[in-house]
Image (spheres, rainbow, N blue to C red):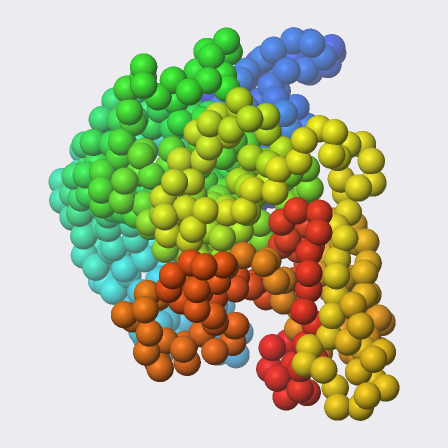
Length: 586
């Protein structure tokens, strides 16, 4: 049966665009069984993937299980239009308030439009700087190209996504008339082959989007090379899984490869040649390792025997959110792979859902603090600036986790534990070594409740003036509390003990450890003022110099108390705060 359609044709039915992938008979449909096989631009629009009742008729480039449908060859497609017709349809529709006169000439109706109405429409189009005509069934430029320049000469941003182009030459003809063009989107267009070469049409374009094109990478790269000033390129959602040649885009500063199929960073090794690259977006891939490892080598440190993957030093921002990173070793290797790394996105990876080394689940902020502590030069994490105070807290918290891991390890395994934390020695030099509260296997059984609780000694400070209240409130109170209780819950318990509003209590852990703060030669009034919040003594236990007790304030948060306090015993000073101070803190 003859048909007006051909394979590869771009079509639209009821404003849903797609590509004809098959024309022919379909088994089981009787005599009138010739159908059009359509792959829709919207992968959720169809009912199958080109396979019907067990027989494969065509393949969907998108790989979607619901990206295709069969339609009768007699189906009436939406009428395609030119670029300027689409611009007028969207930005200069007919004015219903202006009366028009109809004339019948040779049986056809002609509409008389006043010159004032035409001038208003032309003026409206002449001012346009952003033109978004995606999905408006465009398949040609205009019969007279120069008319595009006269109609909308100021366009700097253009979206031609999801239209009915069958060759790239049409895009060239449209863009060639837009001298101010800097941003171009041609997402979800299907060009069979890019044979046309730009002749200066894209000389001013700095940003290019080519999502869901499903073209071979070589052809998309060839197309991108036609943009000599290109700085930002988006190749997301193209089912890419390997970059096996150099892109040679010398001016490129930002590259987006989101929601593709990469599984390790080595599949992107050719990008290391892009020395101008400053931003790399890899959100939503399947990345879990830096290098691709054979199954029998997984979990081993092969960095000494494998080539080091290193990107340019200008690359400062990397987005690895929504991937499959499940190991902190991957995070440790990021500064080596990206030596210029300053900003990172790592949220929504399996490593954030893991259980910490001490057996308790991570609280929401724990993975961020561990990431900050592991990457020394990081300045921004998940779009949040890392302030000096936050970094100090993160590194202290990370050291406490390492200490817990060391405390539970066998003596012979301590060096192995430390080797898994590359910054351990450096952090010990900055903050001092953590206290290792080691217990033998006979001291504590992990199966007993003792392993999951902390014995707290709470006392109120300062003493109250009333003698009766002093005897009641300053007495030491002992409580055994599970490590999994969060700080708000612990404060609630303490508030009931001392009959005081929980959020107006300040809890301070007195570690019992003395830290040196100055020698005798450095003893000045200013130094004593600096440490006036803590007790300062000279020569504790016959040691020379000035010393200060190490104290840790337990701040309000949803973190488990077990990650804030080391060991199974802790002495806590409880201080009531004034209403103004507590309101300011909350």
